[in-house]
Amino acid sequence: MAIDVNNESGTEVDEQAILDIARYALARMRIHPLSELSVIVVDSDAMEQLHIQWMDLPGPTDVMSFPMDELRPPMKDEDEPPQGLLGDIVLCPEVAEKQGKEAETQHSMDEELQLLTVHGVLHLLGYDHEEPDEKAEMFGLQAAIVDGWREERGMTGPSPAPTVS
Image 1 (tube, rainbow, N blue to C red):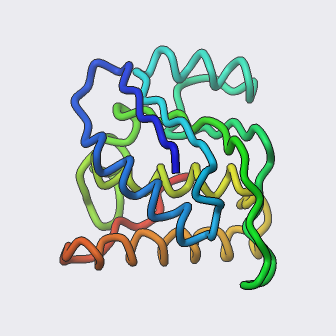
Image 2 (image 1 turned 90 degrees about the vertical axis):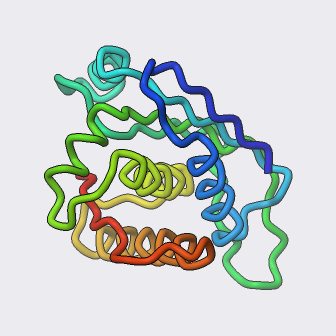
């Protein structure tokens, strides 16, 4: 997997954890190992500009995904996954920090960024949460991926509850 993490936010974030959880999520979703992903971490002003430009919504948001080749997970285990450019995930640590503090199970900014990275990956793979059944599927998969990654790393305690909208 070719994954680039570029922190343009001016905030110190755990870039290695973002890289690791993105790689874990893509492997878990059986995305071709030669596929490419870019993760960009920006400040709230840059995120607000993107949010207005692409969603016509005011204020910064936590995560945005910009798919490129519209890759999807293979339908069956024996299917060969397609190779390609997944796209870009844009994260905002300022929003992540606020959400982590306000979450039912309070957690750190970095834990929230890890959750948001998985959320962004799932959006790039075509998952959405507009309808209740879509939300249940996406958030269930998101929790399974985050939990699996945390377990592999020997992390204890409850995983962050989804705070993304």
